[in-house]
Length: 423
Image (cartoon, rainbow, N blue to C red; front, side, top):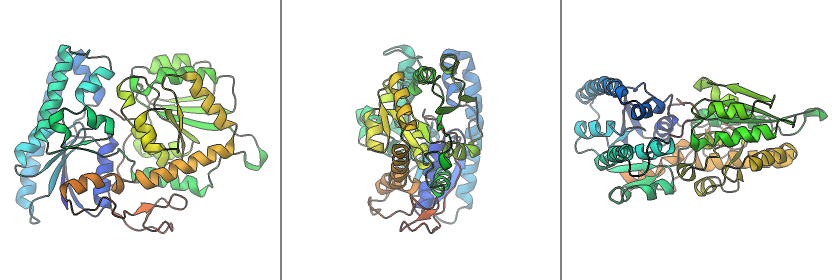
């Protein structure tokens, strides 16, 4: 199949788009990208709701991106000798881009990656109450975008059920997955034989990493309280990466713990190795409605990187991870602290969870695996159970079709972005 991936998405901020591109290419499809990144992150877009005077800035940047996209689309059409594409994939945060795609590519199936709704994000960040003017505006933006799409991608069954009835039949679940760089980072950990206990009888500490945006969905107030509860426990050290609205409160709560290292930002290319250098990767612990419907990007990435996963006990995360994670009640700092103490005190159990998470990632989160449902929707001759080259869980980060660890080229764009994005 031939795909055109289109829009103002920013793959460095939103790794979901990069995973889809990797997956399509890894499955053997041809991918053409027409992309002019809109240099406004979600926080900046949400700020327009708080400060409407920012709207001209958003519209101006969007107009510039659209002008460049139109020019490039026309050039691509004139210069192409391979015929039309089979589908146009509008990248994440494409609520406006999908309208332009529909105008430019009439008669071609339009696939919208609707990973988050505008209304849901506004509610999660406390900017739109139920039935208020802001929520009605955000819902109108969502509904208009969904009407323009022939196929709508969501990441969980819960998000599929939340789609408006007219769009639900056009929706399919495509998990977020993880990029190949994360699997490669995990392979290096595998080759270290899953370090969990003290080397040569020496002292060791459980290394825990949290990467996040510090929105209510992430539950970082719970994280801060858990870190405070671990202040007297010198067997656990924690790395925290990211910033956001709840960052100051989290940091104040954890101020008495001397074994927490804080980073506001880590370059995207360095994140896989940083996460893979830890024993445990933390997921989300928020109690919002949205937190109960998602599996965050960092859970997929942490598992691919060979970390044990500790995250909130929600239906979509249990469905995605099965028995390959430690689940704790959302919003319960005591339970989170207790789970980390237990892993620190039982290296064998820690190693089992690390192996289980890595294996789960290889079997279910590899890019070419996660795109199978959308490939099948566009071309029903694509088998849902088709064999997809994947990395060996225990030997290699390169793709292999037989589990031997011998690399097999799978193609793909290895671009990834920050791990903390979930919308």
